[in-house]
Amino acid sequence: HGTPRSRPGPRAPALRYRDGTFYGPFNTNDLGGSYLFRTDDVEHGAWERTALGRGLHAPSLSSDEADGGTPYIFYGSGATSAVRLNDDLTAIEADFPNIFRAADYAGEPFVGGLFEGAQVHYIDGEYYVAIITWPSGQNRQEVLFRSPHLLGRYETTDGSNRYDCLVYTSPSARAEGAARR
Figure 1 (cartoon, rainbow, N blue to C red):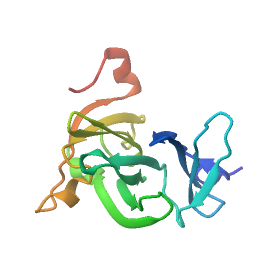
Figure 2: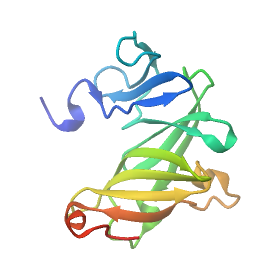
Figure 3: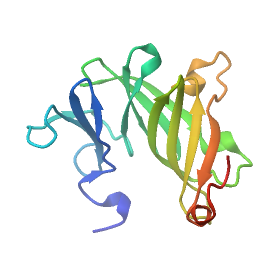
């Protein structure tokens, strides 16, 4: 079947609920990129499929809650990027590449290599992003970032990275508790 990156079918699905509808964005390696499925009945309803027109690695639907819910899909491998969707979530309107990258955290021993699976949550006026990183020679680790701005560097006048790294964990750190706070 090839390597994990070349296997056919859906990859990295993420289920989200928004305004009475369930959404399932996912990427494929063999069916023309990413799709956004939707239904109002997750158990018994029909699912409608929308092709997004390109690949978005490990996509996750998010909203900018500070501006009333503008829809975004966060995605990436190696860096975390986003696309803004139109209001009915049927097309990509704008790109925001490299919102944060491993290079933004040079000197941090737990960040590097793979950056994927971004899960964005809005809590008390701040955006939290849980993401997988895989530094060279280490196991995969989960890292939590925080920012008052969903799009980080795109919402600052000087383009600086506004996501702070809060906590990380790895398989060995889980046995001992959180690695960093």
